[in-house]
Amino acid sequence: MKIDLISILPEFFDVLDLSLIGRAQQDGLLSIHRHNLRDFTYDKHRSVDSPPAGGGAGMVMKPEPWALAMEDVLKRGESDASVGAISEKPVLIIPTPSGELFTQDRAQELSHKPHLVFAPGRFEGIDERFTRWAAERFDVRRLSIGDYVLNGGESAVVVMVEAITRLIPGVIGNDASLEEESHSDGLLEYPVYTKPAQWRDHHIPEVLLCGNHAKIAAWRQTQAEERTQQVRPDLWQRYQSS
Ligand code: 6GU
Image 1 (cartoon, rainbow, N blue to C red):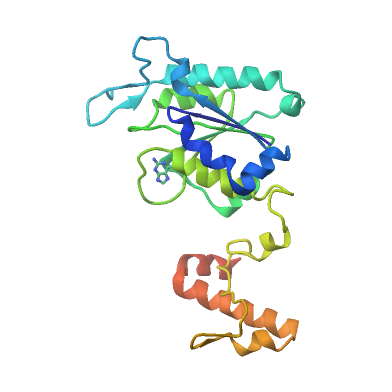
Image 2: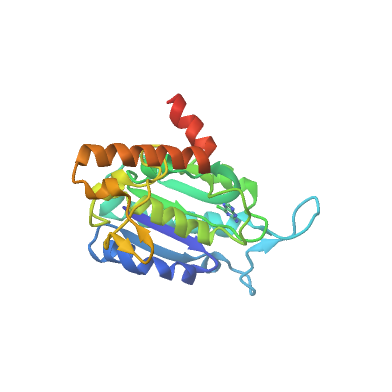
């Protein structure tokens, strides 16, 4: 998978060189390219923002630097053999609190795409005309990571890249753990324990020591259901109706 990240804070993405995602890049499963949006400005102050048309607070990102950055990404893509053979449009993800909710299902879908481009805005967001322009060249997704507001989309990009890339075969060591974790089956994960069987005054649930795998699986299922019911009634309702 190829990933292009465009931002006025490209250093923000240095965390993606750590741990499993860093390893996946070294192993060639993933190539992540950072671009500075200000490299696509041509005025003295390298300005990327401007006051909102119609008035109001804050600043809005101008569409032109974004369009130039996207044209550069597309041009590089054409000459890149790893994604060059693919006829579908690259996916352009615009992180925004006014987008559709980014979920495990969405992460799963995006993990099969050969080329993802992320355009995280700062300030009050990017001029809406950029989205329309981009829709002719990209499969555009406006995505939010939750019902709260961040200062910019960069941390949301890190969240989405991590959730998406860990689903690529080989990125995490143990593919089986992907199937057992929270959200993979619509339920939250059951509680987990490790040795010793007694720690301070606390004991492991008896059933985990019985050696009967069917019994343990049934207990875990019940725990997952109870936890989901208590903590996330919204997920529980969806789970029951599916
Ligand atoms: Cl994707 N961006 C920003 N700025 N705030 C958010 C968000 C994204 N998702 C939730 N809050």
